[in-house]
Image 1: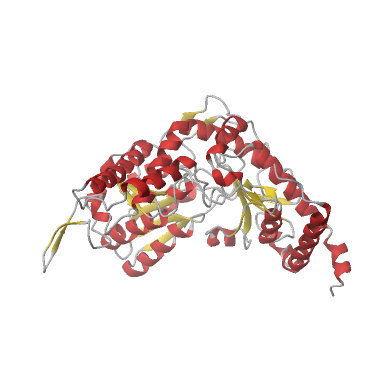
Image 2 (image 1 turned 45 degrees about the horizontal axis):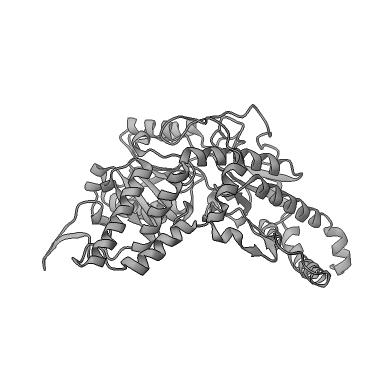
Length: 493
């Protein structure tokens, strides 16, 4: 528990806070019109229906045996995460930005440290003992990732993250397979990483991109609209498994089934699903799945692409250099089979070791338990934020059919207050949330807002974290409610 500041420190702190507030007032006054949107007044009512513990899981149905107590897991494992012991502005840290990046357990940090201290060498290239150790660790991490999502090791390509993975598919498969008039289906809720690469490929190949709209009632994936878009011209469907803004678990079973009818390939952006729920790629039957290590307790600069082996075998290399070749001649080269074909150059060995350790860590807890814990937090977060007056929440309610399986994140706006201002004042209280467009500018434009604040929980968060965040959010909103009095005090025209 942080030591309370002395009275003189309290006065200085309050003065600084008031100064920041004065500087931010003008930016917030200009946001009143942001709530005159097509979605205003059309948010899903809180508590519509009873909580449904049967979740349409990733790769099949999953029935939660019980709703895990947030304290039973969150408090138990917090000691594993050094950063969570930090204080910010003299306040105990409440970290609610895990949709941007997760904190890292000491087990992952120790694994990377041990590699550098005891096994540092290049992989695949030496017969000496350190090279053998490094190769065993690197390839062992591939085995761990494969097991984590029920894939074969030859189907796991190490990348720097999901953005790199999607670009790999876009430039290897997309540039070699797409032709003028072919169609790509995305959705309006996609992260920029699942839009921009396809725009670049479409510009070069003449392919056409179509977007699945949000449903008009609950801000979720409109499956019926998707069915009107897909046709014999559709060559690819690339969809977020879970939205990083709306929090909804998209109906990937139905999406993949429809894609198979027309022979289209399917890529899942699984950044917000792999860290939070059990994933079985064999049951999912997607062609590719992209994920980032840094969102699943692993290090930044790590990630992977899962691809069906026959699909990977048919894809040409994307980058050329060492490691990805069989033989090199002066006039031509031959290439290694997957996954090595797509791993040119010296890889991020320590990062992959850390990613493997992250898979070990999550597996030791159990992804069923992680998912049950976060489902519990999802409802608490939704109920807590939606109970605050003048808040707009985005995405379907966890109590609705479209919100079944909703992630433990809440993107929202407070009437008349800039999201960045909210985040600034929450940070002064030790609360870390994200503000901005969350790499989803098209979605925010469709919602007629410039940005939003987002609180996102993970396995190490507790009910107490959410309660503390809510109290600081309410006090910040109350401070802005006194804007008129402060305006006269500062004598602003």
